[in-house]
Image (tube, rainbow, N blue to C red; front, side, top):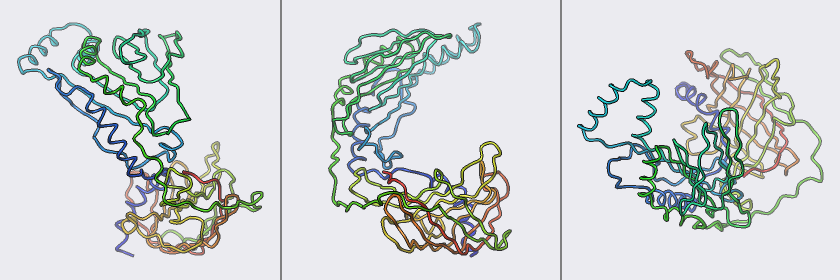
Amino acid sequence: MKNYLSFGILFILSTTLLLAQEGRPALPAETAEELRVLQAIHDALPRDWKGWKVEDETALQGREWFHEGSEASKYPFQHEYKITYVIDLTPEEAQRRRTAFERDTRDMMVKVEELEAGTRVEVQIWVNYFEDETRSKTAPATKTIAPFNLTLWGPKAGKFFLGDWKLTKNQPTDDGVELACRAVKRTDVSMGQIQALKMYVKTTPAIREEFLKKLNTQGLKALIGQNFLNQKVITVSNAKEKPPVKPLEGKNVFWYTVDGGPFTNQKVMIKHSETMEQAYLRNNHPDPNVTQNAVTRLLIQEDGDTKLRTPYPFADITVPFIRKTGEFDVLTSEEMSGKTATFSTGIGCWNGCEWSISPVRVHINVTRYDPVGGFVEGTFSGEAIAVYKANEPIEHKPNPIKIKDGYFKIRRKEDRY
């Protein structure tokens, strides 16, 4: 047991977000397509801009994970790119500007804002985003700047749009103006296809014009309509499950006994909830017919009392298989590196948990796995670590405990991708 104590607190502090993370790994073709698009944007941006240098820029690296599992299949494949240029002055010019700044008697905030606007260019590019909103003290002008089909030109920044964009809102407000732009999003094409692009450039109008002259606008325009993503990477087709005619009757059940450290055979029971408790298949492939690396997630939590804020227990378990029964062990975070099984529970939770529990070795046996509308049922027991108020900045002492007589029966809900 002692060998695991050093891993327990770290696992508890870091595991909550990981356990709750939805999504899927990117396919190799998707990673390659992301890299191709980023490279095209990189190559279109100014590289030999005299008097300017790059301070920060998006790394040329293809995405390896989708937080929204349906992106690039059910929804358009989105890409983002950022670059910041700063003025590259000779020592003599830098000293001259410092002297002028010190002699300037205007308000400091005005001076700083003006200095930054003239010495810095911030550029952001979004691909396959179809909405844009702007709030400004002064109304930006709409301009025609080829090859962009819509341009908003303001005193401090400009927005440039490629694709089928239109200005849909231009409305005065109490402190300025509010504008909205929308692009047509086609659903009859591959979601890997590039349909829209918007670019934001923050700097003075004069420097903005200089930037546009250096920008390879045709290189950006060429992206529109491209689709290099092969979405037909299907190697297996799974037989469809036959769901019950109607959801099976019954309530969600989850309990276990914890013993050791501050606990003496204390029974923990999570009350039934229709909305907060669920078991669902989480797919890791954009095609619903392919369950590559798919897992089952059991998320068990009571209905929160937002008025009294009564603390409640919770549990989050990842079963490393789908649509079958079976047994598996969940070990410490270090031993489980690269594996998909997880186990985490909490006692007295509201804005953090009074007690957070992570596994040393917890054995889980899934004895029932119904289609959607039925139940996922099983038992669990083993050794674990309990930490008091793990999310608070206090000294955290790991308490070795035993989990006994664990049982769950959770309704299976719609699959997620």
